Length: 124
Image (cartoon, rainbow, N blue to C red; front, side, top):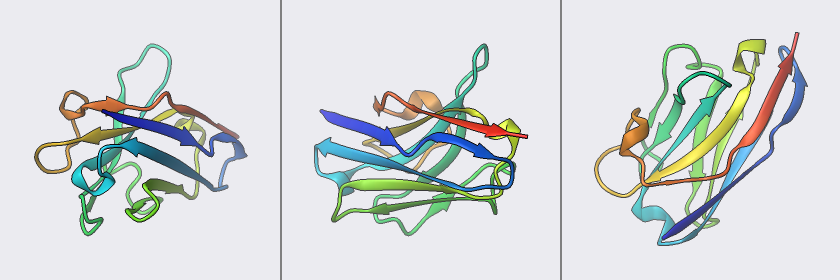
């Protein structure tokens, strides 16, 4: 069992930055890969970033690569998503997720546990 809690969302102007945190409890933090996803009303949840167990490998889709950075601190049981140069289209609820088996994944169905999400709103 893993419990994930996101924080750090809020309202920011276009071009601004936010750092999201994902605090984990339960199973050993370094035993699972982590991903960040986002979702807007009426749309499917979409992949934003993923990180390996050690933090040595990271993955991003094209639309956030170079603007978003995923990281993790295994000593603090916390993952982060640094978001820079935010755009109105980044507005969404952001979720972190844990995957116990396999490599980091871009697929929603590959993740075993999810947090409750944190709202990010980017104004134009």
